[in-house]
Length: 117
Image (cartoon, rainbow, N blue to C red; front, top):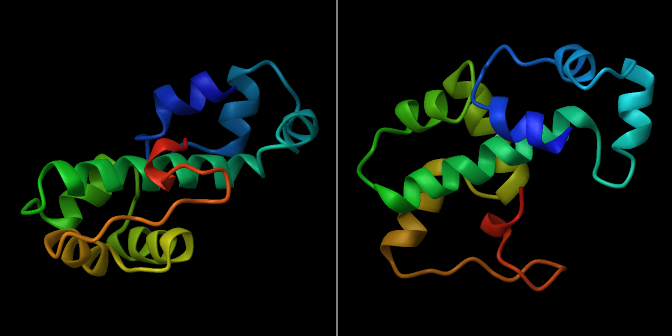
């Protein structure tokens, strides 16, 4: 399941039903399988945000609309909202912090969040 998400997260039309179907699971079983990781939709969102962070770090001059599209978000608004919910910062604030030499704090597991899915 995680491999399928990692392979397909950039598809803005990816749905929980498609993930379940590709993994030969019912929707209900998929949610049970994901209990330790969070809901399937949240896994997709976290994977997309992690990718967006990598893109912003790699090219801070890249437009945020381009980052959003390349990360699988169907709209800029959805990207901004998801990014803020996940990081506490807007994508622009994140980029500005990087420009000032800011490093992400360590998460509860001792890693910076960009190392997680």
